[in-house]
Length: 102
Length: 408
Image 1: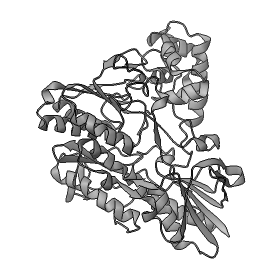
Image 2: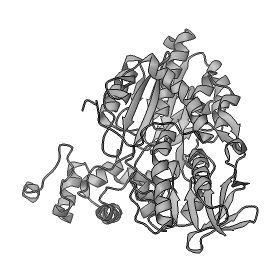
Image 3: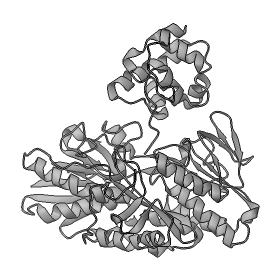
Image 4: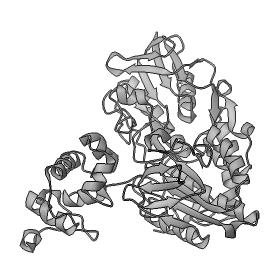
């Protein structure tokens, strides 16, 4: 399993440095590290949304961008990615840390 | 006849309308500013209202007194903006066709977006201080508070003036101390951020002040629900914070007509180029101040620094020239820390707040990230400077951020 990420670069906080190194297998591996054993279609809907918007804008989407963009409620998002969903999805989707605010 | 339309007569709208009316030929241009209110609020002053330091007259003035000669001021809600048609329809039925549009409608709080926040406890033992009414209603609740759990919660970022909740807490700590009941009050700050503030060096400095003042920080707290029957604030990850008195900073959003017009982001802030402040969707639209989606603090000082840049860019655009004035995200905030002291932070898009002196490097007199009495007087003096600027008197503070004399 760890062979999968042996050439992948991570920063000190565990976010992938190069989003292009990402694959769906890597996402499954990273999800397990975050305590999510199985990625369901609902998980993937959110991960795919974050990949698309994150790669287009160069930034991981915020919690609100995810709820507005996917139509999934904040409550459900926390059920799918417990604790901090925006950070957790960003990590699993191979994106940088979401910028909460300024 | 051409029309230069400004929506919003707050800090940014008033200043931009005046600047434009001074330079545009009145035979060719009409400058109109629209606002739903007739009252202008000095919003930084709301912080002092709950503690009785400021009264209504200190922070509320008629908008009309700030509107420059030659500017038409219309009191009306905006019903609809149709950017492809260059047209705004007001709630009173008036239609304004514009050549250039500046959006400066700011940001408002939306307590109704958090489950239970506006239920039984709202303005009973739950208050806000981001509106004049909220700050005024909070004053008697604070003076009648004799002890218990005092909770301050930021629902979601970004918010207007991100340091205001901390200042509010510092002032509350000083207020309860002087009243002799501080040992009976638990002060809890529940924030979605991992710490006191957004920027690392300032967050560490402010975090230390919170610790010294025995204020408990509940970090990474995403408020999901308020149960007024039990006086409990709950997060989405099911942490519960009981309160006796809660001060909420509800979700902040821009005006809804901006979202409906398709030029706003998920929080109705206008998508603009962060340096030119021009809409990324329509070339004859600009957004200023809190209404823009730039990654800078939503604060009056930011408006002051970006105003000159946007103004010059618009004039260049009118003349068919390339826009050469770039806003750097410069922000400057005095932060009250209680007991007649304050600290000061100065930062931009790329530099976080650092130690040093302001406005003159090494000399000051203001102390960046230090906690001093002179910073406090600077904060109080700012209200007078603000009103001067709103009357069109220029104050010579450099717009661009400078690293001179700062210690990285």
